[in-house]
Image 1 (cartoon, rainbow, N blue to C red):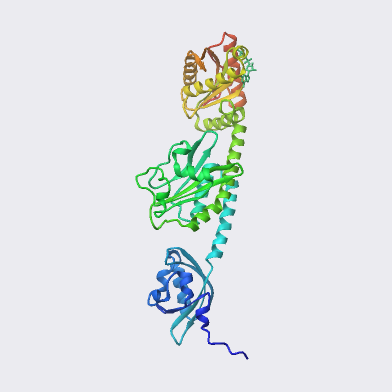
Image 2 (image 1 turned 45 degrees about the vertical axis):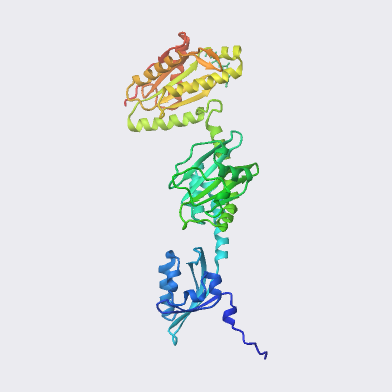
Length: 453
Ligand SMILES: Nc1nc2c(ncn2[C@@H]2O[C@H](COP(=O)(O)OP(=O)(O)OP(=O)(O)O)[C@@H](O)[C@H]2O)c(=O)[nH]1
């Protein structure tokens, strides 16, 4: 048999050996304790081990300690501690009770790195899931905020998006305890975001290095820590994630910087995917020239509005609007001017109705207005007259003043139909009659289907 030189095995172990009293007072810890928990043995002997436990894990740790004290061997217990520097250590314990010494003998194995890798994988997975499951960009931002909040302090969190073509920086998601969401601005106006987005580098401002960087956006209470990470995609940085902290407890370290940088690529991909999805959805539902709802979306809205009107026994009106002699504008001034006029018409129609009403473009020079708010039958004709009078003002097409008038047909639910195509057909017919009578006037459809309210 080899003779082993007198080695102090406990001192050489990478795991920390701990002896504690029944009341959790530390009697002995091996040197590895410092590597794992940050305290020198002499700093903790006589202190209570439980006082270092992460507050969220205290109750379960107390139960486990009691179980060990009752003589049960413990081989797999995991909990979290707050290290001397305030960071969190994840520990896996093996522990047993020493009846003769009336102490607990426990060995702490540091699993912080493994836990971090696991939670990073979970975060990456959660972000890619969110890109598929969330309804829209806002919901995605909210989800990303929650997910990042699991990794690091994220009380003050913002998503900044940068439109390079328009040089516009906007903050579509902005949660901050002391700073309201800034309005859209040129990138140069936010020096820190500009640095992050232009250089494509993560930036961490701390009380130690802040003088080397431009100050954050002016606010009543400047942050102690500012952490910004670019959202990199194949076409460059599309924006940045910005975290701010006003307290030392919420401080950010280089480790947090690395963490955020690691997840940011996934976040950028998720945002890009959602933006693309929203763009496609918009293209399918909105007219690309005027940005008004198109025929499909209008018919969907009309169907829903009819169901609501039926349930609440309310009136609903449709205004079918067709421009008179629009073709002449194309023929004399060109198609581009015709396009511009259609955009101006859309704008003017929107100005004639309430935000809750729908103005849609059915195609060509045909528009339709859905009025849900009117209780009285003459509400529709009042709005139609308002439109006629709005069109008495000429349109300004890049310096060219142009007069154009509409022909308007009105159909009302329930008296002109209870189904969307019926109602639309009657409004179209009424518009045709007003055009036949010379245009620039309003006609209400003939009463064809009397339906009691
Ligand atoms: N500039 C432009 N013109 C369009 C667009 N869509 C359709 N048009 C044109 O709009 C015109 C619509 O036709 P009409 O409604 O019969 O023309 P109109 O001169 O208004 O005739 P009335 O309604 O009888 O007064 C056609 O000349 C189409 O080519 C578009 O998106 N942009």
